[in-house]
Length: 290
Image (tube, rainbow, N blue to C red; front, side, top):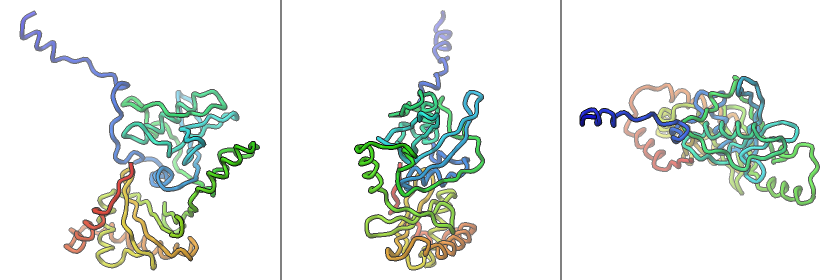
């Protein structure tokens, strides 16, 4: 073989097996799924919640329950009654939370009944995403005051009951506010907050929040905007509100704020100098979760 032929042959590399390649990073992993902002809420800020989903695998239809967390930080649980539970807050090994959860879902389904999935298989470029599996057109999330959904009607021994009680005591009280999608009031110690997961493009949402803040319209009633964090490609502004008022007392103020936000979001003119300064202040204090 001549030198030119050898160079040409060396330039032809066999395609890599996607199963050996890392999962591509997904900045907004749940984009396109029903209830994207609700999934982000379950993954990041809601302590105890569940949601039922339907999915297809190998030509068969299945049902599963997504949960915020499971006992012992399990990734999944195939109960003895055949039901499948998968945890959103069990962490992930790749840069795509959707692939991580899809791998946990399929691995849990494959387990014998009555078996927990202590850790999920590592996702790769060949792993399916939730977008490839889920078949439902909406997502209804149920908030719980504690983790009793782990055991349902099963009786626990003394140690199990004590463990569940300790987990329940650690749950921060959390309430969904009715006047805006994916907005949650919570009590952390002696202070109360409202965290609103915005389902919009992160940059556009930041611009809208900056416009409101520069105009002095970013307060939630008497509650002040503390800042915002970003997670799973979405922006989550946070307000501190009065600790001596019930959660739903903030619903009307949130509804008014949501209307102001939508107006600001629709604005297409360039940010003014004051709005740019407000945006810089918001971004400089941002924290990125996962």
